[in-house]
Image (tube, rainbow, N blue to C red):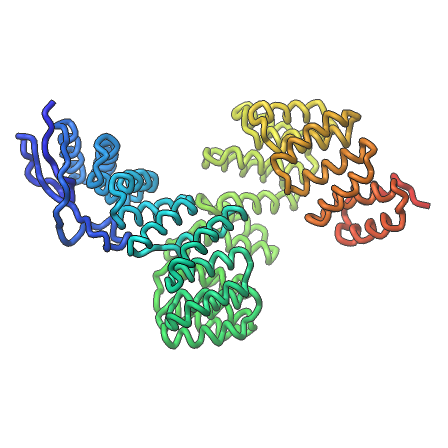
Length: 577
């Protein structure tokens, strides 16, 4: 097969040359911001040539024709396939631009990866791949790429990484902070790194250090809106609202059109009890952007947070009038109605939530609302209808129904619901675990063990199942050595989990190792002063002859957990004179 000479595509192929070869070019300007990646460049620069076989050329021509006919899904598919086949950076970049345009996130990530791998000296390629990694929260890998871009003299987005890092586990958060620290040492005057470091310190609740870092940024760039915003936000978070208000007043003089600053200012004013001033700021915001649904929702939620329900309701109803963010608006209107004991209105709003992040919370509130009013069959009916409406959420909705039934002590009905779900999803670990815990309530230890061992057959390193089975064997049987082995494995997997440490302490107590049991239970209680751990600790202290300490701990725990049947039962069993 004879190869054709073809340069990477920048614009549409207009006349299709049946003879076989077309030459065009792409923008390779490394200084172009990544946010422009989905837009066609305004200038054309020379790009290196690549050799393509005629099959590849045909596939790319089909892709361009598909683009002309607004079949961008077909266009993207062909370009992405040829990016894999040819490993050509221009083809990969073209695939990326199409993916950005139609919002195909996974395809954009794959195209960006190929572009960066095949053009490793291109700052824009590396920067774009880093941003795509940030979108899927591969933050440490993205940070390494951004550091390379920084070394090459390009613009970076470390602040985006830091903003997305809030939900990272502590170890990953520390690892990302370490990467940022290393870069900051090499580039001490880079304000992006200063801001990113401040955000990460805020995520770690190191507020004084975060404020110190932001002040360093503001000393260098006094008008930095991001610096001013985050400084004020931290001050508000730690209760220094007077200082936050002062900073925001000054910031708004310099940036009167900045909506984020003004919204935060309104929130701070609410925190200071200056309700009318806060509402005036919200009114200003809304007058400037009456059709901005995101802003309207932010104002509504801020009013809710500031305990201004009437104001919140006005903005939420406005969203409904505009036909925007309806699911979110109905959910919060339901919460407002529920807080007023208007359960029928709350029910009607919750039933209007059809999709989005609020769907499951809405049905959670709806189910509990009906169950509390002895309308459990009605709650079940709505949950079954929801399973038909949202088949992708069936498992979560089965679990929700079982939880409501268990709360109402309808254990047989809950078991029936979970067993029905497991006929459809026989290997689902969440359903198996829920039924196992229900079996424990029904004193059906054989069923509990069967379901937990099924989980361990699917996932032998499931620490939760190992711990649950080990604890049950230690607490409800005399199979102590077997229980200890299961819990030891759980501890190897989750050494810092107080529930697992508590289980290990309890099995040591059952084995008669009181000193070791006390050490472990005190460790678990220090990490999580739970009523179950305190009950175990009371019993161990008592058996060691330290009755006064046991009684004092029991009284303190009962004050914290007055409804705990476990605490009441342990003292009845010990029967102090």
